[in-house]
Length: 316
Picture 1: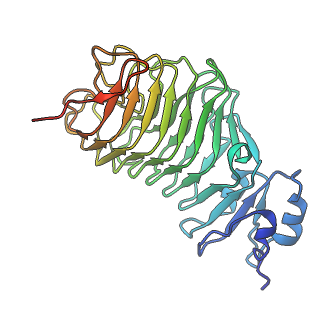
Picture 2: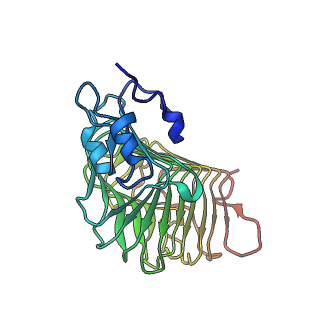
Protein backbone atom coordinates (compact mmCIF):
# COMPACT_ATOMS: atom_id res chain seq x y z
CA UNK A 1 0.00 0.00 0.00
CA UNK A 2 1.33 3.43 -0.89
CA UNK A 3 1.83 5.58 2.20
CA UNK A 4 -0.49 8.59 1.67
CA UNK A 5 1.48 10.62 4.22
CA UNK A 6 4.99 10.19 2.82
CA UNK A 7 4.99 13.74 1.42
CA UNK A 8 3.54 15.60 4.42
CA UNK A 9 6.64 17.77 4.52
CA UNK A 10 5.68 19.25 1.16
CA UNK A 11 2.57 20.76 2.76
CA UNK A 12 4.28 21.98 5.92
CA UNK A 13 2.60 19.22 7.93
CA UNK A 14 4.22 17.35 10.79
CA UNK A 15 3.28 13.67 10.90
CA UNK A 16 1.88 13.05 14.40
CA UNK A 17 2.97 9.96 16.30
CA UNK A 18 -0.16 7.82 16.44
CA UNK A 19 -1.42 4.34 15.60
CA UNK A 20 -4.71 5.88 14.47
CA UNK A 21 -5.62 7.51 11.18
CA UNK A 22 -4.57 11.06 10.35
CA UNK A 23 -7.13 13.36 8.72
CA UNK A 24 -6.54 16.79 7.19
CA UNK A 25 -9.03 19.66 7.11
CA UNK A 26 -8.61 22.35 4.44
CA UNK A 27 -11.23 24.43 2.67
CA UNK A 28 -12.19 23.08 -0.75
CA UNK A 29 -10.83 26.25 -2.32
CA UNK A 30 -7.44 25.95 -0.64
CA UNK A 31 -4.35 26.23 -2.83
CA UNK A 32 -3.55 22.52 -2.68
CA UNK A 33 -6.96 21.15 -1.65
CA UNK A 34 -7.57 19.29 -4.90
CA UNK A 35 -4.10 17.77 -4.83
CA UNK A 36 -4.58 16.70 -1.21
CA UNK A 37 -7.92 15.06 -1.94
CA UNK A 38 -6.97 13.35 -5.19
CA UNK A 39 -3.27 12.54 -4.97
CA UNK A 40 -1.79 12.73 -1.49
CA UNK A 41 -4.81 11.93 0.69
CA UNK A 42 -7.18 9.79 -1.37
CA UNK A 43 -9.70 7.45 0.25
CA UNK A 44 -7.62 4.73 1.92
CA UNK A 45 -7.80 0.96 1.42
CA UNK A 46 -10.41 0.68 4.17
CA UNK A 47 -12.67 3.17 2.45
CA UNK A 48 -11.98 5.98 4.91
CA UNK A 49 -11.82 9.51 3.50
CA UNK A 50 -8.81 11.43 4.86
CA UNK A 51 -9.23 14.88 3.31
CA UNK A 52 -12.14 17.05 4.52
CA UNK A 53 -13.34 20.59 3.90
CA UNK A 54 -14.73 20.99 7.45
CA UNK A 55 -13.91 19.82 10.95
CA UNK A 56 -17.38 18.24 11.25
CA UNK A 57 -16.63 16.13 8.19
CA UNK A 58 -13.34 14.95 9.66
CA UNK A 59 -14.94 14.06 13.00
CA UNK A 60 -17.55 11.95 11.21
CA UNK A 61 -14.77 9.95 9.53
CA UNK A 62 -12.91 9.17 12.77
CA UNK A 63 -13.08 5.94 14.74
CA UNK A 64 -13.59 6.17 18.49
CA UNK A 65 -10.65 5.60 20.80
CA UNK A 66 -8.22 4.53 18.07
CA UNK A 67 -5.88 7.53 18.33
CA UNK A 68 -7.23 9.40 15.30
CA UNK A 69 -5.73 12.86 14.74
CA UNK A 70 -7.25 15.73 12.77
CA UNK A 71 -4.81 18.30 11.37
CA UNK A 72 -6.38 21.67 10.58
CA UNK A 73 -4.47 23.44 7.81
CA UNK A 74 -2.82 26.78 8.50
CA UNK A 75 -5.10 29.59 7.42
CA UNK A 76 -8.26 27.47 7.62
CA UNK A 77 -11.41 29.27 8.79
CA UNK A 78 -14.87 28.05 9.75
CA UNK A 79 -18.04 29.68 11.04
CA UNK A 80 -20.24 28.03 13.66
CA UNK A 81 -23.68 29.59 13.78
CA UNK A 82 -25.90 27.19 15.74
CA UNK A 83 -25.93 24.90 18.76
CA UNK A 84 -25.72 21.84 16.50
CA UNK A 85 -23.29 22.88 13.76
CA UNK A 86 -20.30 21.10 15.32
CA UNK A 87 -20.39 18.25 17.82
CA UNK A 88 -17.26 16.43 18.93
CA UNK A 89 -19.02 13.10 19.34
CA UNK A 90 -16.16 10.65 18.70
CA UNK A 91 -14.01 9.68 21.67
CA UNK A 92 -10.25 9.95 21.65
CA UNK A 93 -9.89 12.51 18.84
CA UNK A 94 -7.04 15.01 18.85
CA UNK A 95 -7.54 18.22 16.84
CA UNK A 96 -4.29 20.02 16.00
CA UNK A 97 -4.20 23.46 14.42
CA UNK A 98 -1.23 24.05 12.15
CA UNK A 99 0.48 27.38 11.65
CA UNK A 100 1.43 30.14 14.08
CA UNK A 101 0.39 33.69 14.82
CA UNK A 102 -2.25 34.90 12.37
CA UNK A 103 -1.97 31.70 10.29
CA UNK A 104 -3.53 29.51 12.97
CA UNK A 105 -6.97 28.03 12.18
CA UNK A 106 -9.83 30.31 13.24
CA UNK A 107 -13.32 29.20 14.29
CA UNK A 108 -15.84 32.06 14.51
CA UNK A 109 -19.06 31.64 16.50
CA UNK A 110 -21.91 33.91 15.44
CA UNK A 111 -25.64 34.34 14.68
CA UNK A 112 -27.02 33.39 18.12
CA UNK A 113 -26.19 33.22 21.82
CA UNK A 114 -26.49 29.42 21.66
CA UNK A 115 -23.81 28.98 18.98
CA UNK A 116 -21.37 26.53 20.56
CA UNK A 117 -19.09 23.56 19.99
CA UNK A 118 -20.57 20.54 21.74
CA UNK A 119 -18.27 17.95 23.28
CA UNK A 120 -20.15 14.73 23.94
CA UNK A 121 -17.33 12.17 24.01
CA UNK A 122 -14.31 11.46 26.21
CA UNK A 123 -10.69 12.32 25.52
CA UNK A 124 -11.25 15.09 22.98
CA UNK A 125 -8.36 17.54 22.67
CA UNK A 126 -7.91 20.85 20.80
CA UNK A 127 -4.47 22.38 20.22
CA UNK A 128 -3.27 25.65 18.68
CA UNK A 129 -6.63 26.94 17.42
CA UNK A 130 -8.24 30.40 17.67
CA UNK A 131 -11.90 30.84 18.64
CA UNK A 132 -13.69 34.16 18.06
CA UNK A 133 -17.05 35.38 19.44
CA UNK A 134 -18.94 37.45 16.89
CA UNK A 135 -22.37 37.71 18.53
CA UNK A 136 -23.59 39.34 21.72
CA UNK A 137 -23.13 37.30 24.90
CA UNK A 138 -22.51 33.85 23.39
CA UNK A 139 -23.17 31.53 26.32
CA UNK A 140 -20.18 29.25 25.79
CA UNK A 141 -17.51 28.45 23.22
CA UNK A 142 -17.63 24.81 24.35
CA UNK A 143 -20.53 22.98 25.98
CA UNK A 144 -19.63 19.63 27.56
CA UNK A 145 -21.71 16.54 28.24
CA UNK A 146 -20.14 13.13 28.91
CA UNK A 147 -16.82 14.78 28.03
CA UNK A 148 -14.32 13.36 30.49
CA UNK A 149 -10.69 14.38 29.98
CA UNK A 150 -11.53 17.20 27.60
CA UNK A 151 -8.45 19.36 26.92
CA UNK A 152 -7.71 22.79 25.47
CA UNK A 153 -3.98 23.27 24.91
CA UNK A 154 -2.34 26.39 23.48
CA UNK A 155 -5.62 27.82 22.16
CA UNK A 156 -6.75 31.46 22.05
CA UNK A 157 -10.22 32.90 22.70
CA UNK A 158 -11.18 36.38 21.53
CA UNK A 159 -14.16 38.70 21.61
CA UNK A 160 -14.83 40.82 18.55
CA UNK A 161 -15.96 43.85 20.58
CA UNK A 162 -17.50 44.92 23.89
CA UNK A 163 -20.88 43.67 22.64
CA UNK A 164 -19.79 40.63 20.59
CA UNK A 165 -18.40 38.30 23.20
CA UNK A 166 -18.14 34.97 24.98
CA UNK A 167 -19.66 34.78 28.46
CA UNK A 168 -18.01 31.42 29.20
CA UNK A 169 -15.31 29.43 27.44
CA UNK A 170 -16.36 26.02 28.82
CA UNK A 171 -19.84 25.35 30.22
CA UNK A 172 -20.33 21.92 31.80
CA UNK A 173 -23.69 20.28 32.29
CA UNK A 174 -25.17 19.54 35.71
CA UNK A 175 -24.45 15.80 35.76
CA UNK A 176 -21.64 15.01 38.19
CA UNK A 177 -18.31 13.76 36.81
CA UNK A 178 -19.27 14.33 33.16
CA UNK A 179 -16.28 16.63 32.73
CA UNK A 180 -13.80 14.96 35.06
CA UNK A 181 -10.23 15.53 33.93
CA UNK A 182 -10.86 18.91 32.27
CA UNK A 183 -7.56 20.53 31.26
CA UNK A 184 -6.96 24.11 30.10
CA UNK A 185 -3.25 24.77 29.63
CA UNK A 186 -1.15 27.46 27.92
CA UNK A 187 -4.25 29.19 26.57
CA UNK A 188 -4.99 32.87 26.14
CA UNK A 189 -8.34 34.61 26.71
CA UNK A 190 -8.74 38.18 25.46
CA UNK A 191 -12.08 39.34 26.85
CA UNK A 192 -13.65 42.60 25.66
CA UNK A 193 -17.28 41.95 26.55
CA UNK A 194 -19.16 43.90 29.20
CA UNK A 195 -21.30 40.94 30.31
CA UNK A 196 -21.19 40.46 34.09
CA UNK A 197 -20.09 37.11 35.55
CA UNK A 198 -17.82 36.42 32.59
CA UNK A 199 -15.64 33.41 33.37
CA UNK A 200 -13.47 30.71 31.82
CA UNK A 201 -15.24 27.67 33.27
CA UNK A 202 -18.91 27.68 34.28
CA UNK A 203 -18.89 24.57 36.44
CA UNK A 204 -22.53 23.47 36.60
CA UNK A 205 -21.75 19.97 37.89
CA UNK A 206 -19.44 18.37 40.43
CA UNK A 207 -16.19 17.36 38.70
CA UNK A 208 -12.85 15.83 39.70
CA UNK A 209 -9.27 16.20 38.41
CA UNK A 210 -9.52 19.69 36.93
CA UNK A 211 -6.31 21.35 35.70
CA UNK A 212 -6.05 25.06 34.80
CA UNK A 213 -2.41 25.85 34.26
CA UNK A 214 -0.09 28.45 32.71
CA UNK A 215 -2.82 30.53 31.04
CA UNK A 216 -3.26 34.26 30.41
CA UNK A 217 -6.77 35.61 31.02
CA UNK A 218 -8.16 39.14 30.61
CA UNK A 219 -11.76 40.22 31.19
CA UNK A 220 -13.08 43.72 30.61
CA UNK A 221 -15.98 43.01 32.96
CA UNK A 222 -16.35 40.58 35.82
CA UNK A 223 -18.12 40.52 39.13
CA UNK A 224 -15.85 37.80 40.45
CA UNK A 225 -15.14 34.19 39.60
CA UNK A 226 -13.04 35.27 36.63
CA UNK A 227 -11.58 31.79 36.16
CA UNK A 228 -14.34 29.53 37.49
CA UNK A 229 -17.86 29.86 38.86
CA UNK A 230 -18.96 26.69 40.62
CA UNK A 231 -22.73 26.29 40.78
CA UNK A 232 -24.47 26.22 44.14
CA UNK A 233 -24.25 22.79 45.73
CA UNK A 234 -21.54 21.58 43.31
CA UNK A 235 -17.86 20.89 43.99
CA UNK A 236 -14.50 20.71 42.25
CA UNK A 237 -12.09 18.16 43.70
CA UNK A 238 -8.40 17.64 43.06
CA UNK A 239 -8.06 21.01 41.34
CA UNK A 240 -4.61 21.91 40.05
CA UNK A 241 -4.55 25.64 39.33
CA UNK A 242 -1.03 26.87 38.81
CA UNK A 243 0.91 29.59 37.05
CA UNK A 244 -2.04 31.53 35.66
CA UNK A 245 -1.94 35.29 35.11
CA UNK A 246 -4.97 37.53 34.82
CA UNK A 247 -5.87 41.17 34.32
CA UNK A 248 -9.48 41.89 35.24
CA UNK A 249 -9.85 45.53 34.27
CA UNK A 250 -13.11 46.44 35.97
CA UNK A 251 -13.10 43.91 38.79
CA UNK A 252 -14.36 45.52 41.99
CA UNK A 253 -16.19 44.42 45.15
CA UNK A 254 -14.51 41.03 45.00
CA UNK A 255 -15.35 39.73 48.45
CA UNK A 256 -16.99 36.73 46.76
CA UNK A 257 -13.76 35.60 45.04
CA UNK A 258 -11.62 37.10 42.31
CA UNK A 259 -10.69 33.80 40.67
CA UNK A 260 -13.25 31.27 41.91
CA UNK A 261 -16.74 31.57 43.32
CA UNK A 262 -18.19 28.60 45.22
CA UNK A 263 -20.60 27.96 48.05
CA UNK A 264 -19.07 24.55 48.76
CA UNK A 265 -16.78 23.96 51.75
CA UNK A 266 -15.43 20.56 50.70
CA UNK A 267 -13.79 21.43 47.40
CA UNK A 268 -10.20 20.20 47.22
CA UNK A 269 -7.05 21.07 45.36
CA UNK A 270 -4.21 23.54 45.19
CA UNK A 271 -3.85 27.11 43.88
CA UNK A 272 -0.17 27.98 43.52
CA UNK A 273 1.77 30.84 41.86
CA UNK A 274 -1.25 32.52 40.29
CA UNK A 275 -1.11 36.30 39.69
CA UNK A 276 -4.12 38.58 39.31
CA UNK A 277 -4.80 42.30 38.88
CA UNK A 278 -8.10 44.12 39.42
CA UNK A 279 -9.50 47.34 40.86
CA UNK A 280 -10.46 46.11 44.31
CA UNK A 281 -8.01 47.06 47.04
CA UNK A 282 -10.30 46.72 50.07
CA UNK A 283 -12.40 43.54 50.04
CA UNK A 284 -10.50 41.26 47.69
CA UNK A 285 -10.10 37.49 48.18
CA UNK A 286 -9.01 35.00 45.54
CA UNK A 287 -11.65 32.37 46.30
CA UNK A 288 -14.88 32.41 48.29
CA UNK A 289 -14.05 31.94 51.98
CA UNK A 290 -14.03 28.42 53.49
CA UNK A 291 -13.90 26.74 50.08
CA UNK A 292 -11.67 23.83 51.06
CA UNK A 293 -8.95 24.75 48.55
CA UNK A 294 -5.39 25.38 49.75
CA UNK A 295 -3.04 28.15 48.56
CA UNK A 296 0.64 28.96 48.11
CA UNK A 297 2.52 31.93 46.58
CA UNK A 298 -0.45 33.63 44.91
CA UNK A 299 -0.23 37.40 44.32
CA UNK A 300 -2.77 40.15 43.69
CA UNK A 301 -2.60 43.86 42.95
CA UNK A 302 -5.49 46.29 43.15
CA UNK A 303 -3.52 49.38 42.15
CA UNK A 304 -1.84 50.23 38.85
CA UNK A 305 1.96 50.58 38.76
CA UNK A 306 2.49 48.43 41.84
CA UNK A 307 3.72 44.90 42.37
CA UNK A 308 1.27 42.41 43.81
CA UNK A 309 1.09 41.23 47.40
CA UNK A 310 0.62 37.75 48.78
CA UNK A 311 -3.05 36.77 48.86
CA UNK A 312 -4.17 35.12 51.03
CA UNK A 313 -1.59 36.11 53.60
CA UNK A 314 0.96 33.53 54.63
CA UNK A 315 0.10 31.50 57.72
CA UNK A 316 2.27 31.49 60.79
